Length: 218
Image (cartoon, rainbow, N blue to C red; front, side, top):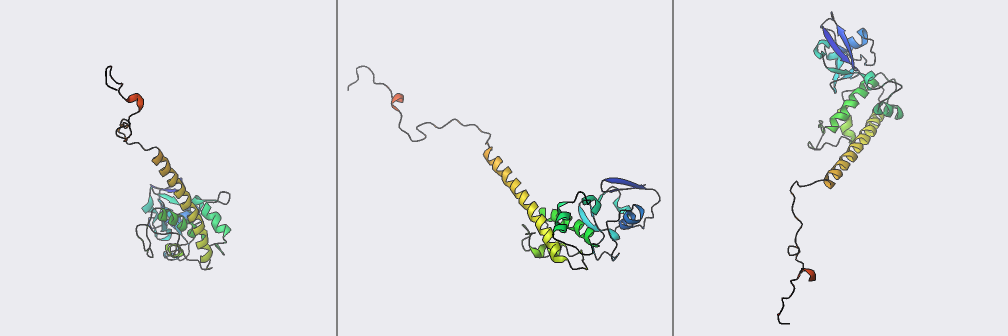
């Protein structure tokens, strides 16, 4: 029996043709129609889904290969009454026209943001240790597998850049706060007594001076 976990819900299949793609399972068997069939050759990206957080072309993936995997479609990212930050940004920046490629664009961009947070380099990355994912050429390259025949690319990049910059800024603030808190509360784990006046180079006080003995010459 094949069990597919799609958008946190399990679906079981007893007699599914092993040649069936993940895209066809969603669209024709489960009526999950967010992912679109465009080229059916893995070239346009309209069918993009997330498998365990990583983006794939579902038109080229056999469903039987993903038994037990965590599969996410655009419906699992957000619905009209509960849009994700990225979906809202696409709406605000008018990052679509006909909308046919938009589900795949948003799925791909969702994974893109996670990849940049993990410092994954791209083909155009110059600093492999600290890739600057906010560069326009970085976003363009990382989204190059998703075509928009309406040519809404400038606004797509603006939408992704907005969400990415906000999330990176939030993570940076949290990291700085944690670092500050850790530095303030750091202890060596080894206790030492406070330094003496001699160690500090101070002169002994009048009270600490030895009193003169009786009979001592003045």
